[in-house]
Each structure stands twice: as structure tokens, then as C-alpha cells.
Image (cartoon, rainbow, N blue to C red; front, side, top):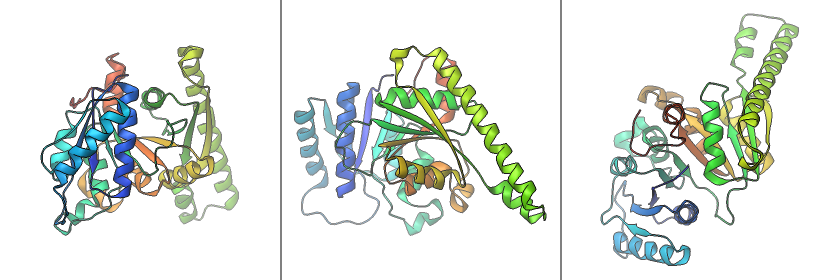
Amino acid sequence: MHFDSILAVSDFTALSSHALERAAQLARQHQAILRLVHVAEGPTTFLTDPVARLAHRARQLARRHEISAHAIERSASLNEVLAEASASTLLVMGPLLQRSWKRFHLGTTLDQAVHGSVCPLLVVKQAPVRPYEKVLVAVDLSPHSKSLIDFASLFSAPTVLKLFHAIDTIEDAKLRSANVSPDVIQASRLGSRHQARDRLMQLVGGLTVERPASAGPPLVFEVGNGDPAYSTALHQQATQADLVVVGKRRGSALTQFFTGSVAQRLAKWAAGDVLIAPLDQLHAAATADTGWWMGGRDV
């Protein structure tokens, strides 16, 4: 995997400062160019020119991390940031939770970024005290799962890589509404859990055969119950994973408003950093044997 260009977003909050620092660390790790952009989603008063202030920050990061870094010479709206990100291989930002009344139906700034970014998006919530070592991958057991696991492994070279699959309890609710007995519901739940574990074992077994021992840490997995986003957020907190990796699929704006995607909800609920990868592009890149995300390419 190779990242050519990383775009990091700042609104000069403490959390966006963490995002810039993490982006600089990743730029050094992947020998990528780092670009900084100031996002302006509403009227804000600064004592100094935000672009000049961000340019100064870029010079500081370049010196400290020995990387190539510069600031884009104008403030940008979120839509302009997403347009810039289409030519990048990674978008990095803090959990921007502002909500514009003009675009209330689109959710917060973070919701819109998760929904609209065509490149992988890293949401930084913690101060970057060390590289990502303990990584949790939320898998849905679809054909995209392998590509997502490979992506997570190559993104950060973790020492611990754990797969987590949550069984949605919506089926339990359907059975209860049909007045099915508790014993039948329990049997259905156990059957779903055994099936999920079997599929995870097959997935891990296939990946272990394909990957040499030096390719990364051994894969472990766990199955949980409940809403996938909420269950994954709880598991991340329980295991103290540094990073959660989750895939996203294309969805409509209407679905985004009423329920949000698993990736959107996880980005808001997780206590740690969250890396969101477009599954269609990852799968297409793997199928084409390019091995990684092609920045700016909407397959």
C-alpha cells in the first residue's frame, strides 16, 4: 500500500489539532505529501488570518516530522474539502459535529464527510501518542471483508489485529412480534452465532493461508450481539483498541437522514479513532490486483 497525498482538515479546535498531528505521523510513515485545509462551515471570528495560521502549522509539522507539508491557500466549505479529497488517498479530520440549518437533513459535518468522501476517511478522536498498534476491524462477512482486513493491516502495521462481527438483534424483534416462544428465539440466536463463528473461522483460515507469517500479526476474532455500530463501539472501548476500521457502502441521502450508516454511527459513538473505507473501491482495487485504494478513482 502506498499513500501519495494526505489531506488533513482543521477548524482550530483541540481535536482538529490531534488530527493534524496524526496526519503528519502517517505522512512520515507512508512517505506521503501532507496538505492542510481550513474548513469554514459558518461565520467565525479569528484574531489572525486562518490560512496564515495554518501555513505556520504546516511548516512546524514539516520540520518536526521531516515531511513535505503545506496549507491550501484559502478556507474551504465542506463540499470543497470533499472535492479536494477526491484527489487524495486519505482524508483526516476530527469529529466535526457542527450542523448547518441550511443542510439540516444531511446531518452534522462529520455525517456529511463520512457519506460524501470517495477516499478513506480517518476520524481522529485521541491525541496520537503512539502508532496504531491495537486495531479492531468491524466485518459484516460480505465478500468485501477480506479487502477491508488487508487494508487495515497495511494501513498501520498493527501488533494486534482483531476481527469483530455483531449479529443484529432485529431478527429477535421480528420473532417476538410474531409471538414465537422464548426457546425458539434462543435457538435462533445460538444458530446465528454459530454460523457467524464458522464463517469467521473460514475467513481467518483463508487469510492465514494466503499471508506469509511476516505479513502481519495473527488474526483473532469475536462475535457480539446488538446494533453493529453500538456493539463495535462498546467492544473498542472494552479492548482499548487504538483504531477501529469499518467499511461503508453507498447510500441515499434519505437513508442517511433517518438512520445513518453503520460507519456514520460508529464514527460518532466510538471513543477511539475510526478509519472508514469505501468497500466498493477496496474490492475493485483488490480484484484488479492493484492492492490498494486508487485516489480520485470512483469505480
